[in-house]
Image (tube, rainbow, N blue to C red; front, side):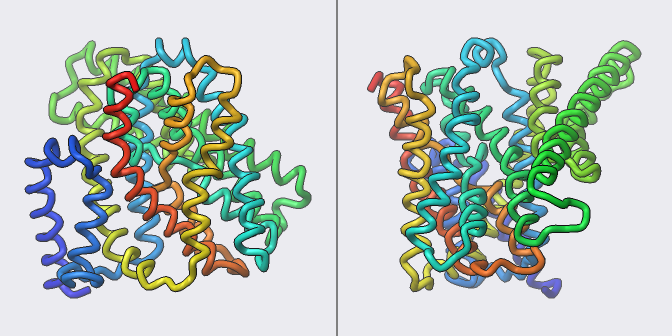
Length: 403
């Protein structure tokens, strides 16, 4: 990409940010969510539209952009957790993660046998794993809206924060079973090792860094070392450090970021809001970039897709393969049927699935069904952005009206 194209892209991004920053309330209170609008604008300005955006983004660049966005969003949502509500209703996220998530993985694998009977079972399990984690960023209109009952908000927030981290060792295990390495011999030992490394290291890193940050904050406040400007960078720095350190040590950076946000938010109490404002701004900025790039580079490719199967699987993934396991997981609770359907429907797919798809794309040797698997994942993400984007506000308003 030459300098002229680079500055033109930058000018388009900046112009959109300037306009949207002043009109966000009007758009997001209507039918169109932020990510849906960002994706549509990227598509309009990109090679499939007006051809004003000229992008040549490598897979590693897309992965890094999606990872950074996901980390900031996970950390911020976790730090904003209402611990009183979560403690009183902890059964909801536990059911969603321990019952709903495994059932979703099983259902996705079995449905894959119907749609892609030519693909190996392990690769169908990989496809189900790529689409199992829900997206905190796409679900923000729901988890941040006071019209949604607080237990439901916190339950969906905890689910989206932890299920991607839980799916990381599952995905690595499945990839390793396809091409076992010398370091991991045997299915049982492989599973145990990956789970301990990914989850255990992530939690330990988050715990240690959160405690250290609390100590630094106390010393800085006590001695008057802090400045208002630099104080806004404290929690973004902690979020990125949790992620990067856990990843470098062989753990799950996503679990580290989410758990780090939970711990620091609880220790800081109401003071956390002073520090979190910049996190939310960075998260929104990165979200604009990732969805505009996604719209410009991916949507034109999918519109020319002549295979019905990826779209069929995508629709099932957002409905039956998510909603039925959630309904089963919530069986026996006091939640009314309308809320169970609401929780089942609002499991949007986005950033985590993009990151996982790039991991699979970079895997050696390549999967036998790499092309249909990636097409299905991308179709699901696009369909999720559209369908969840246009249904979030109307359904939330119905909940607010007591429907």
